Every structure is written in structure tokens, then in C-alpha cells.
Length: 554
Image (cartoon, rainbow, N blue to C red; front, side, top):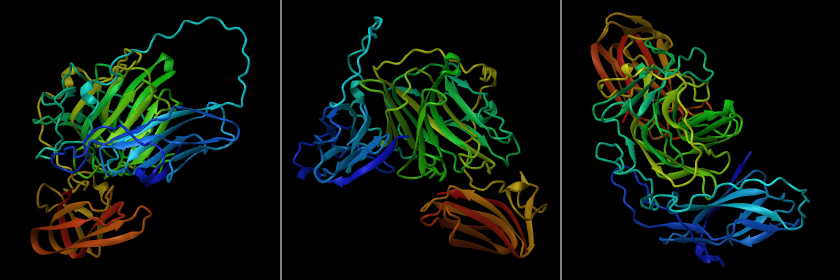
């Protein structure tokens, strides 16, 4: 198990007795609106990657440099298997403790405090000078590995790429001029994409990926539908598309909106499975994330970054993001896959590095998947009706770094081209309420009676006396703003109770209902800090009928 330590909280570089520096790339990330670079910040580490030391350990100064900004503050992050390495933030001295084993490997990452997307990382290997190498006998001659390709290892026009999203006036993220694979303005191109019909995972009654759950809008949004437990169409089903072309080392970027509630995994991943199951080469971005190791604390305030080389050899990291992914906005998800000069995968959200991994890095090209599927509990319970994962575009910047060729296919689990969506659909509206029209699965609500006398359609919810009906809504975070509305006739109220993750009540909101005929009642609500989920309760104070209950993020 690798341990990550943040060991120096933004100490000032200018007072060090050493030379400090760095390399990084890109513009600073902002909110909506155009984002432009105001400082060309670089971060670098000038030390050699081999540390010579004896049994007593060693200390030495770090050669770190930050340029392009007056703010020279940095943060040190150490990734190591044990606890042998520390950094003194006051004088930039790295210490390897006594007893460190020969060949011990760790990674040091230096991150700019001004812009956390600017960083430098260096892999260190310990050379124990007090340990004599064991003699070895004669060995058979071996054929040397082919030379590693030389030349530009990333495209020249990518060297200063920040990855920070540039938002358009409609809230979408500007697609790149180069390296764009698809923006789905022509629908789901059968020459470019498979549609998966595969089933995996351990959720009981899960029906897998369904062709019917894949659609697109006229303005080029790919819609991947997840159907939860309360769906009356294909309950417990998901959707995924797969490139027909394999992709290797490079930068993968997807502009995406996740579904608003827990219960399904919104995922982007490369995948190669072969050699009789010995190989499972995979790089994953998955949301919602959870605490690692051990799971728990599931939420859209984390992203799960995982890479695999076999079904038992993988590394997974649940990392906090700057803002929860289900805030109703488009976000840019990216990973950069390197095999030279050393294997590494860098993961980003909106241009900000969330994790850098040097273990279990794939070496074989694979197909690229985008999909939403229903795991067994580790993304929460699928207690929802229908939600969507939305893709605006996918781009790929190839790196001139080696990766083994492969010729994978989905294995017979792909849709017939004649069943691909052939016409656009209207953009769906994300509603946090399940069965708010009371025309669907009544199990979405606890309590109440489904009756006639609806405002629209056939059914409504009837309550009398002090009865109430309630529904839990997950992944509601502090500062999120919603529009709550319902049509009602009678006397009662709609109560919103805000809960922390530990189940304690933070506060409540109330929308009173008092009308002899159907009337629309509305209220704007804001989740308090520390909120994790809410419970919506439709209550009676006498007799009341509710219909078309809705909760939409603003």
C-alpha cells in the first residue's frame, strides 16, 4: 500500500539556501467564462533520481525552482510504500531514515501554491552503498530490448497545454481545434464507436448496458442513460460506448456532466484484456469516488483514479476535487498516460492535478470506453428513476512514447448497427425527484396513497390528517441551490431536512401549501455547509393532494 504524505504546506522558496525551480504548463483555472493565463508558472526539481546512502540514512538539499510568479510557495507530496522519507519545509532538506531497504522507490511531487496544476514530480531510488551486491553465476546471453524511440515525446503544441476548461456562454466547454476525436454533432458514428451490450459487476438483477439507453441531441450531446430501481422501463440498466480504434500513450480529455444522484458509476477508461486473462490493462476515471483504502464516504466530492495491469495488480486513489462533480455544470476530465522516461499516469479535473501514479501503469494499447453502469453498493444504492451521464466531446493527444500494440474487440457484446440511434432527442432535464408525477413506480415514495384527481396525467398523491410521504435524495452538498416546486390542493407543507454524512440534522426548510384548488408552490433552497443528503417530506394538515413535485439544481 502506497502512503501519500503532504509534508510541507506552502513554505516560501525565496529563503532557502538551495536553488529552487520547476516546470509546469498552462493557464490558471477559473470559473465560468473564458480562462486566460495571467502567469506562466513553471516548477522543476533538479536533483538526481538516485540517492546513495548507508545504513544510517542520508539527508540532502532539494534543488527546486519556481518561476513565472511572485508567489514562490509550494507543497511537497511524498508517495511511498513505508515511512522512510520526510521533507523539512523550512530548509528544503529531504531525509531518508536509517534502515531503508536497498532499491527503495518513492515519488516526490512539488506543487505550486499559486496554481496547483503546475507541478514537478521525480521518482527516487535508494542505492545502499554499504550493501555488497550478491555474486551471480554465468547467465545465458539475452537479446537486448529494442531502443526506446527518441524525438518529441509530446507534441510541441501540447508542451504548454494547461488543460483548464474554457467555458462558452451556454455553459459548455470549448472543444479543441486539434486532436478532437468526436463531438457527436453527427450522432453516434458507427464507424467510430461500438455500443456495448455487456453486463458486469455484482449488483443483483443488474441488466447491463442497453442500446436503448444511448441517444444524442441535435446540438451534439451524447446521452448515456442509467435506469435505477424505480424505473418502469428497463430498471437497473446502464449504457456505454467504445472506440473501434485502439489508443496508446497520450492525453485523454472528455467534457462531461455526471448524473446528479448516487447509485451508478460515471466512468471513462482505457481497456485491454488478453493473454488468457493474465493482462487487464486499464486506466479509469470514475465518479462518484470514495475513501481509499477501504471504501466509504461515497460522494461526488471525490474522483476515483485507478490503473490496472492485471485483475489483481492495480492502484486506486480516491481524491477530493475542487467542487462536487454533480453541481449541474460541465467539467473536463483528463488523464495523461506516459511510458517514457518512466511509466506514469497523471489525472486531472478541470486542469487541476488530482493524482499522479507510477505503479501498475499499463503498457498495452486499448479501446477507450465511456459509460455509466451500476456497481454493487460502492457507488451508493440505485434508488432513483432515470438519470443521465452526458458527454460533449472526446479528444486524444498522442504521445511519441512506446506502447504495445493490441487488437481487442468487445467480444460479441456490441449492438447491431441497425439498432444505433438514428435521430436526435430533446435534452433531458435533470430532476432530483423520482416519480414526481406519481405516474411511475410508487416505491419511490415512502407513505401516502396514489389516487386519481391529478393536476396532470392520471395520478396524484393523496394525504390526510397528519400523514406524510418522504423521499431521500443523495449527493446534496453545501452551497448547492435548487428550485423546489409542486402543484397542490389542500392544506399541508413540503419539508426539506438537511443531513450531514453522519446522519445528524443540520437544518430544515419549509414550503407551506394552502389552496382549495390546484396551485403551483415554489421555493428556492440552499443546502447548508456540511450537507450530504436531504429528505423531502410531503405533509398533510387535514387533506391535501400533491402532483408534479420537482427539485432541480440552479
